[in-house]
Amino acid sequence: MKIVIISLIKFSYRKLSSRMTTKIPEEEYWQLFRLAKEYTDTQNKYSETLLEYPQDFGSGSILNIELREGLLLTIEDVQRLKNLTLDVQAQEHPLGFYFYLSAGFGSPRYGMPQKGDAFLFGGGMMPQTLYNNFSLDTDKVIYIHIEPEVFKKFVGIENDTVPPQLKYLFRHPDEEYYVINGKINTQMQIILQQIWQCPYQGLVKRMYLESKILELMALRLQQHIGEDITPKPVDIPKRSLMEKIYQAREILELHLNNPPTVLQLAEKVGLSHYQLKQGFQKGFGSTAFQYLHNLRMEKARLLLYERNMSVTQVANTVGYSHLGQFAAAFKRKFGISPNECLKGKLG
Image (tube, rainbow, N blue to C red):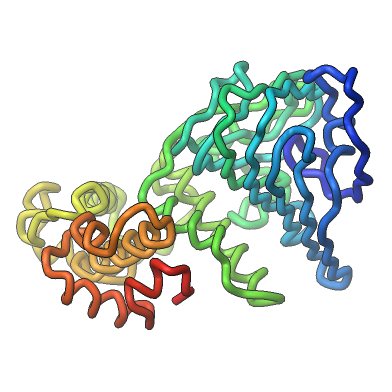
């Protein structure tokens, strides 16, 4: 699979000539990386490739993980110290889901990415494009590339019967691909952090990352086409009810530190207490209160791992005024204390 960000071939390292300009072709750019680590499981078609960023341009690394043929994950953590223009030639492009935890590099053609952006690329032809530094900030980005046929298998599309709401993702190779920007929401942020700090190895790691990727793709698509992506069992709530359930979920996500009561939430979205309870159970497998609690805990863990806040500040951010109650709830959920989490211990 040839893509802009990911390359899974081995690279040899060579120094930049002092006469070389900062505008370089994509192929020459990738040759500057040093292969730091590689693991391949040929039987299961799984591989990991860790590339060190060229020292002449900055520092950091790019981790490429081929979870299966046609499904690739890239985790980029790069600090660029020099301005760079990367010239990428026109090429056929797979589906792409890009999540910017921080950003300093992108293409003016489609709008320079900012922290918190979530770009979605359909399949089709990517025209010749220039990628530039727009700042020297650290790039922390998670990229997912998936071949259209692999995506179709995941969502159960057979015989090219693509639902109308997904047709924009499957353009022909002679058509320019679809690009649209969205925003990383709280659920996505939690999943992205879980991917970034994946504690597993081997088969478990593969299963874990693949499940998180599928969840991310579903959440990203949901921002544009609603919840009716694939056929659903007949016993789930009607779409009109589920729209209100998703609205209720969004209200909880936006008001972690001061959420409405269950009765207030039901009233806000025009449901009875019973309808709200049943909708959350069928849609998310928990009550609204349980969902809120889990969301608070995951958000707290994310903030603690980022190490930009004290434990007290994190507790207040997710709606706990009593530090002891927060610490007890956190330890019940993850098996470690907030202080241990703040120090980097995985729960």
